[in-house]
Image (cartoon, rainbow, N blue to C red):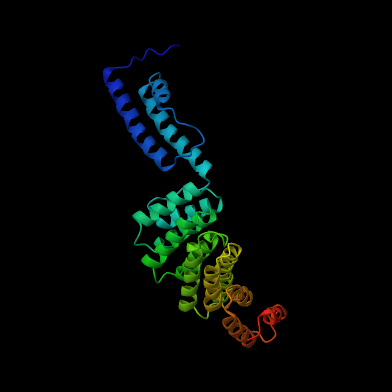
Length: 304
């Protein structure tokens, strides 16, 4: 038996209101949960609802909302309470561990911007930096680590943020033949960590990194001296050898710089200066690896 029910104007009006009331929360819901497993097609939903009775429509609307919520909940694994910073933070950590960096950044930013006075603000700032480091965005990561130190100096993450900031510059440090701005920043950051936390276990690791980075700087100066020697620019070569001798005594290029300097002084016919440098070498390296080559150079110098 066919239904003889006809839609009255009042029913149509109620339907439009009901659909409008559904459409608003649906759009809000889709903003908050942008990854449902099925796409909600509002025009088709409206068309289907217009074919059934008012009471059935109301029931259908309610069931639609529940269904969408269930679908989204099943898709995300765990619903997020956006009024609870703890819930948001935990969801951000889950996203970070799943390498869902876009979602993690969104959630951490919500905490930083909307819940900046809660106990999770420094957590969000630190793990935002951790996310950047994981993505190898070292410049941004260093900035976000520094924001932990600036905005939350008493945070439990302050120590690790300071060290990780230095690690970022260490990662950005290029080979010795490139500009060494980031190398110098890394040395400065590791040195700052040593000054603030001298007894921490990471202070030893910081010292190892400083030695490696300074060795890179010494290598750059030493190689520059070699380039000038090949160009027969003795004065310029001498300047760079002396820089290594005066500023990079803790590097692998300290002793070789003496040998290079003596050779350049010989080429410049500054024999007395060469002999004086040999004497200094003997004092610094009485059992030096290059002692044999130094003595050979000494015997090749003209007699006084």
